[in-house]
Image 1 (cartoon, rainbow, N blue to C red):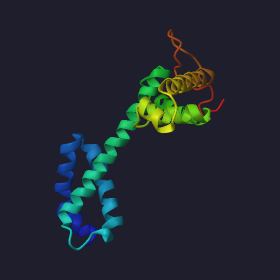
Image 2: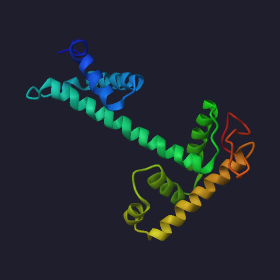
Image 3: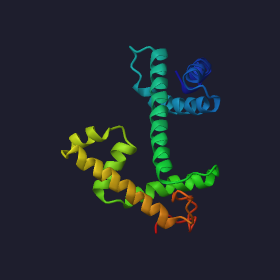
Image 4: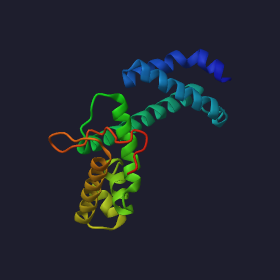
Length: 180
């Protein structure tokens, strides 16, 4: 069966399924597009014994999981930004902050960078990550705190102003280059 035939036969049902899981029509359309890209590129992996319908909904379910995983990471990134900056409603400034955050994380010493990525932006708790890399929990907490402090320094050094609480407004001195 071709991708076009699958689209004609299943797209409405798949879209309805996605919409019931994400409750946002635009997001559902984006996910539907991702699903059909995967279907088109992986249709040859469909085993003759498998039901086309169940395979399609497995691909769809996994794509929805991917969406929520990405959303969770973005939420963690935003939480980290909120801890380090005062975010304005201006979409450009928010995007600039996210770009700067990633650049600043890359500039951190390796131990701090790994700790921030695994715990603040990743799936692991500080205790889990400490155990995984073989350091004490208090040692890892120190790395995370020092990494966050370093990120805060980077934001303060590269941003135009701070609010009354000393938090950066993330309007970069040079809006086109975040490295200081």
